[in-house]
Image (tube, rainbow, N blue to C red):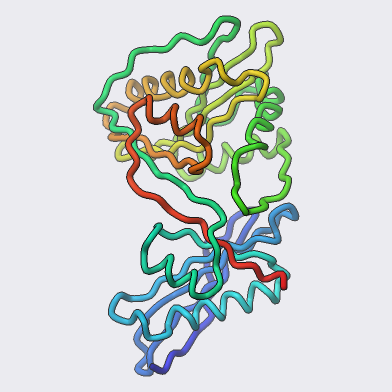
Length: 289
């Protein structure tokens, strides 16, 4: 099959990343596939690029995906990218395609969903802690301690993928929340405050669609190391679920994804009623040699 690749201008430009795009066409000019390569502008993750390849079902196994992959990999090398990442379903043709072309599994993610038809009993915070909630950008009086608490994410399992160090400052904390608001979505945050120090020691974030319908997405839950093992994550998530049910009565469910080796968080989600829906592999292509 004769395949022609056409580089495209991708309008999906973000503050800290942009995409390269290619359209694959057959000899008659009919589109048969596409590829997108997201490049990161932050120095800490500039060595990584995210790849998406789509081939029309009727045109698969004719070399279209391979040509798109070669073009994307060449572009990544030209820009000094060391590793290309691609997330695909476990035990799928897409996964087997990546393996044939040298990808390995960097980490495995378990995706789960909570049906909000279920009602949860409130869980009181452990002794010595109180809860705080806010929507959108964090209140000024909590900005610094909330930013500091994000170090709780530093030891999140990342498998064989090195994401590098990407420290947070107060400006980045504000901008991350503002971007969600600009998209027209609702950011809901629940945090646990140590009553002795007044510092935030744990938090969980949820992003709800602008119309308050469909499924919301968990963005992150973390507890600082010295405060783990006391049930803070379950307490925060229970508060989050009940708050979302109350504020958005038409919301259908909550979505989350957890690295398969993150056993404590998986147990917490299971206890809250999350049901696994599918498993994905985040695959890694090493371009460094």
